[in-house]
Length: 422
RNA sequence: GUGGCUGUAGCUCAAUGGCAGAGUGCUUGACUGUGGAUCAAGUUGUUGUGGGUUCGACCCCCAUCAGCCACCCCA
Image 1 (cartoon, rainbow, N blue to C red):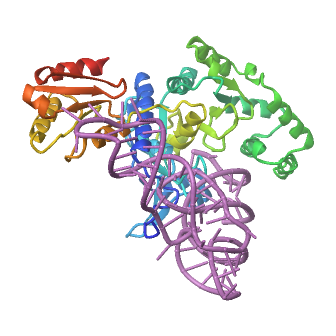
Image 2 (image 1 turned 180 degrees about the vertical axis):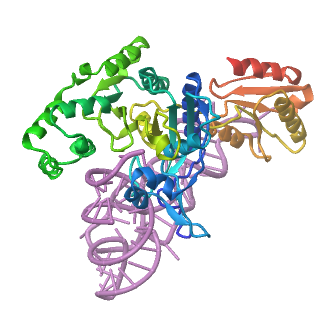
Image 3 (image 1 turned 120 degrees about the horizontal axis):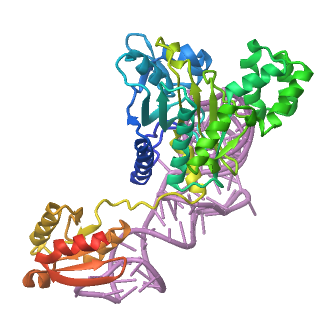
């Protein structure tokens, strides 16, 4: 025990049980992505630090990313997010890609932070983006993708909700109460931090960025107005489109949602557990990102969801899938040295017929083989003892039902196919 | 990066500074061709790691590693 070499802090092992969940999750989000016509892609796991420094701010990258010099001395970053890579890839082939493009990805990301529940240093993330369409229909589609995912994994509107806001609306409202356009970014940051600061600190922060008491009062008024969306034809229309798809139950309007990242230009949204807990995913529209990395101005939007928090949420609401970890549902036992060849042959025949079959790898007591099958949740056990071999039969036991039957070997493939289909 | 809690058998957890335990699991048997139930016996440890204090340390002190919680930050 003490001589075991420990894994890297914050990195996770995927034993078959965890891997099964990861694969299940991948299947769910791949299915949703594909149903909306999105193509799977991926970026490199390594990027130059400049890609992130260009848009995210150097502090963020230097302190929260894995950065190391390669042998040539160049600073390399383990990707902390995918959107900059996406923008770079789009910009690099802007003239040959077919827009609007719908892309999705599921892969590993790294951030150098102190691990705790719901946050590790190595995690998987689903990214999905719609680039080259600036319409409100595009906005509504991205939200529909998110809602559909929740529906597919069994999370109801009572359990999770997607809060949405629009930076264009907030900009108009803030300008109307006398905030200058130069102060907008500061005010966004102020709004984003409200939940994370004490009221006094928040008020102090407001005066630090040069807001008057009247202005702050106006901002508080805006943030308390859950009907503010009615001033936005765009949001009103988006809600209509979602309503038409029966997905509006997941959506709530929240003027406090502004998101921390500077690059959002339109709608912003995040999904939360209704009973508190971390944000399950976040996203929004970014119309300047592609041009920021050197491409032609191209708008887009998308969101990213981490595997850790969604797993916690599913766990909390008892929505984790019950996955049988054994690919094989059939175990062929071996009885003794005399009959073992018959068992090997039987397993071979079943596999040839397309069935997943385990053959017990050594001659031990039948009880031990049965126990093995039981623990591995292998439901069907085939026994080929002297009696069966002599008569050309095989005995099949259904562990779940506790029933067993003996049939001719020639019928076993059909029998198992039929039984497994039930 | 800051503050706090925790670390004992494969797992869940006990043990006033004085013999390191229970449940569960595992092995074997009751049951010489049958798991999951029951019963019996057996088995499981450098108490995270490294130092220190003490006649004596799982217990107290220091360091370190890891996990968790709250900050910070959110990609």
